[in-house]
Amino acid sequence: MEEAELVIDRPKGAHHPTYPAVVYPVCYGYLKGTSSMDGDGIDVWLGTRQEKSVDAVICTIDSIKKDSEIKLLLGCTEEEKAAVYGFS
Image (cartoon, rainbow, N blue to C red; front, side, top):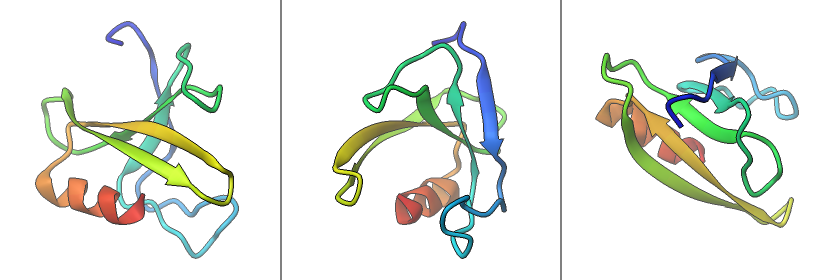
């Protein structure tokens, strides 16, 4: 994973493209050149801590899309983890 480029396509404070009332509490993106269960890059939440190691892994289930995904949390504070957990 260390070789994969992190692409942030939804910075903190950005609105969800489909649901404009939903605001991203932490920077959100993906690891370029990787593959997740949905065929896209592995999803990443990027926190503000200096150390950018994996802090947690969240498994989400989307009953509307009928799929599940794993999301990595990198460098997240406890407050950011709670915000991501509430968002997911």
